[in-house]
Image 1 (cartoon, helix red, strand yellow):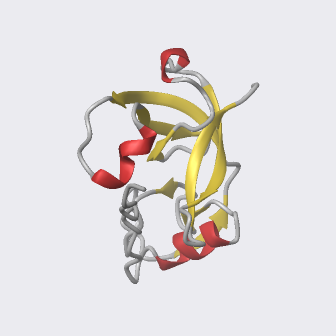
Image 2 (cartoon, one colour):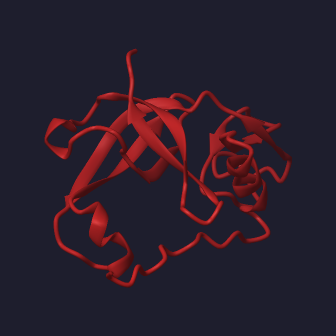
Length: 138
């Protein structure tokens, strides 16, 4: 039996902790500016649109479109060997921010830019949830 290498686990920073806590509850939370009303990602102390320090975390729809993607056929980390080939995409959320994630449940040959997607939370095998996206109907 081959030795399985565990996949790397995201490490939450003080600024990203609410995002990862939400993911564990199967919620997609983004920072929201109380001054200008925009959402942003990745998390930061100031709004990237107006530089206000006044923000909160809000659950978003989890819906968006594939903005760009790449198909990995080459192994760069031994933990992903069983996943080859796999898709890593930039997803443009309806609320504005773009997230880097993978597209699950669809053969890589069928992935195209502008396809509608929705968030789906996957277990990393050790009990930690990670946000993924799957193709959906509009």
